Image 1 (cartoon, one colour):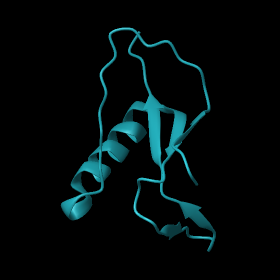
Image 2 (cartoon, helix red, strand yellow):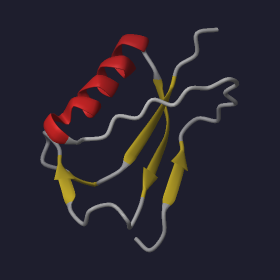
Image 3 (cartoon, one colour):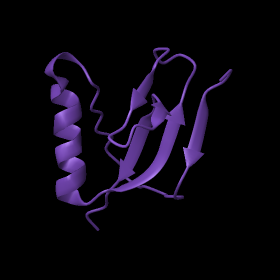
Length: 79
């Protein structure tokens, strides 16, 4: 991968949006908290971002498939 790629899954037009970011740091606290919010709010995944600037390794999922590191973007509206 030579450039950052954004895959748009769903087109959204948020107004007065708030971004919540959960990064996998010490103890995975940010990641766990953001996954909890996504599940509780029933947020929809709207995009994925792949970048050559992420660490150079892959993840192995529960089925044994490899996947590149990525950032996922979710959307939820209270209106």
